[in-house]
Image (spheres, helix red, strand yellow):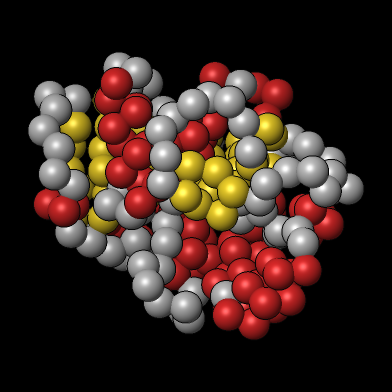
Length: 209
């Protein structure tokens, strides 16, 4: 499958790129500075660009089978890069005619708020990461309002660790037994599995250990 990955040099993006190539996909890595992706592979194309530049995004989306959006804001705790960038990606997809979108959000968005504990509700998302969380909420609304074949993935807090394939997903918002964390490698594993999972269309699966 031909994939373009937006946010390819981020901590999740790198994992998605590496695992996609391992699985035989043809990957276009879109980022402001894709040279940061220290990886050589015959099926990898680096595409420098700004996600807010619609013509550049359209060029990256053209002829792709699917789009993976794992945009982040780096160490910034403010801004709207996720929502605004996702809006540009969706516009490009609609203009070009590419329909499959997998977008990474966060556990706690929407109805999954019920999965969070006091610390995540009121300290992290209620105060420290308040603007980051708000941007994820805006991002999800934009995706849901599109006419695309979308899946929104809501992972718990990112941790270092191997790809295990042993994680929980699509659990109800009332589940209080989850660990609220998952390795970046397993997030990428789950994202890529959605490419062939038609049951995830227009769904918002949560993801955690």
